[in-house]
Length: 299
Image 1 (tube, one colour):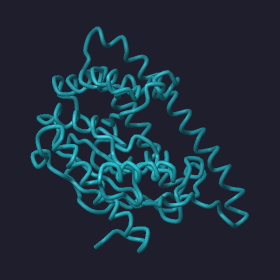
Image 2 (tube, helix red, strand yellow):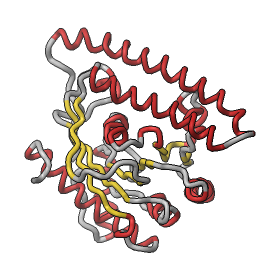
Image 3 (cartoon, helix red, strand yellow):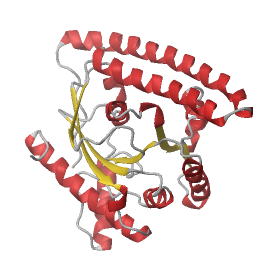
C-alpha cells in the first residue's frame, strides 16, 4: 500500500510558524519567478538573431528559479534531501524516471539536478493545460518542455517533433518523466492489481504500472543524444507530504535512491524497452517495500 499522508506537527510552535514560513517562502519564489519570466519574455526578440542566445537566457532564468527552490528548501525550510545509490558523472544528457506520490516529488529531484550541473537544463513531460498558466506555463514553453494532452494519437507527433529538435540542435537536456502518469493512490493501486491479474503479471505493492509509450519513444528517438537513464526512487519518512506541507517546512527528510543505466545498456525496440521499464518498476517496488519496513534502502 502507498505510504499514508504526512500528519501535521503536534507541537504548537511549528503549527504557528509553519504558515508564516510558507508565506515568506512563497513570496520569495513568486518575486523570483516574475523576474525570471521577465528575462524570458525579453529574450523572445532574440529569436530573430540566435536561437542559441535565447536558449542561454532561458536556461539561466529557469536554472535560477529551480536552484532557488532547492536552496531555500534546504536552508530556510530545513528540508534534507539525502541522495544515495549511484553517483553519476556531472553534466550528462539523461532521461530521469521516478515514482510519483506527491507534487513534493518535484523539488525532491532538484538537488540531484543541481549537483550534477543540470538544474537549468530540466525538461518536463507535463499536462498541456499548464502552458496557459501565466509565469509557470509560459516559462516552461520557452524552456522547450513537452506538453501532453494524454491522448497518444495527438501527443505522439508533437513529442516526436520536440525530441527531434533536441537531437538536431544538440540541446543539453535533463528530462524528467513520472512514468506512472499520475500520483499513487489506493484506488489507482487497486486498478493496477486488476490490470496485473488480467495480464497474468505479479502485482505491485507500492506503485502502479508505468506508461511505457513516452519512455520508449524518448529513448529510441534520443539514443544518440542521451548518455544514460536515471531511475530515481523517492522515499518519504513519516508520510507523504503535500506541497503545502513542504512549503511550510514540515518535511524533515526525503531520501532519493538513484540508479544509473548507460544508454548503450538499454535494449532496442519498443516492446523490449517497455519490458525493461516494467522490470525497473518491480525493482523499485522492492526498494520501497524495504524502505518502508526498515527506514532505509537495502545495503
